[in-house]
Amino acid sequence: MGLGLEFEWENKKNNFVLGLSWNQDIASVSAREVYMSTNGKGDWNNYFNQELKTRKSFETHRFSLNISKPMFNKSVALKLGVGLLFSPSGNKPGEDLYYNTYSFDPFHLEESLIIGRTYSALANHRFSFNLSLGVSTIIQWNNKYLFTLDLIYSQGFKNITAGSFMYSIIDLDSGNETNLDYGLYSRGSGFIFQLSRKINITSIIRKAHNNK
Image 1 (tube, rainbow, N blue to C red):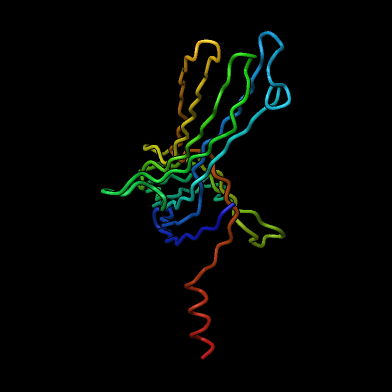
Image 2 (tube, rainbow, N blue to C red):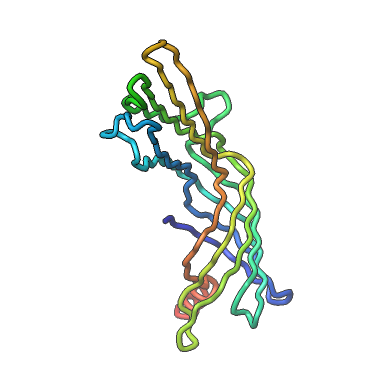
């Protein structure tokens, strides 16, 4: 959940609304792992048959230029946006990549096999271009405006966040070590649900001026 702010200008002649918005957001990666033993001799007191969850999020800020076109007697509007996703933790030119690394205690896969796990969370890029498309509807009660509901899908084009999972498997009998790794990435894409209330600044200024 985050905060946001949008300034809108309505073109009544051509029946559309332009908006410039800022929203707080997060870009995250998560994984679920389950370890199973093939012969029933694993270290059951640790991780076997348990779901291990790993998740890391980085703060982002979403800046968008939006255009809305009312439909169905202005009760619903189609909303199209283009903008920029900014990650304060993202990689800056000339600086090292920001990341957090978490190491977990090794445990026995089998009597002669030990596995160690290391997870790294990285903030890849500082900026990412994004497009959005959604619908906006006005909620009223007794013909009085209450608030606005938006459902928007936003698509990013650069990896903002990455998760790197590394495993070291050691055979105690032979002394051989096998290293495995895989990665997950987030572009900051997804569905956005917004609850907002519009304030007519022009009317407030005019009312304050007339009361002088």
